[in-house]
Amino acid sequence: MLYVIALAVIVFVFVFKDRPIMVLTFEDGKLTQQKGQIPNGFLAGCKDIAHKQPFSGRIKVYKNRFTTKLVFSKSVPSKVKQRIHNVFPYSGGSKKRGRRA
Image (cartoon, rainbow, N blue to C red):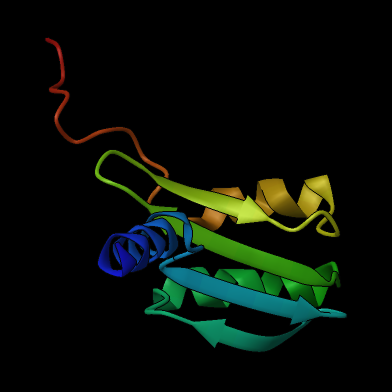
């Protein structure tokens, strides 16, 4: 019985744990913390945006089998969110779809 409870707890933690592939934390326009393998172009673009329009907040990048998605903290302004989406390298369409002639 104890093994079943322990297994249930382990599965629960594994499924519901917050696991972003990249995290960027900004405070007053300065990058204070970064985790994960962040592409150089995206990192430089985010630093440039933060320098021009200083903000504080956190940007997390999640990836599953089908898509890569950006999640922003509530303190990041909507104009800054759009600019960061514009420099994000993984926001293109699916590569499985072919072009039509």
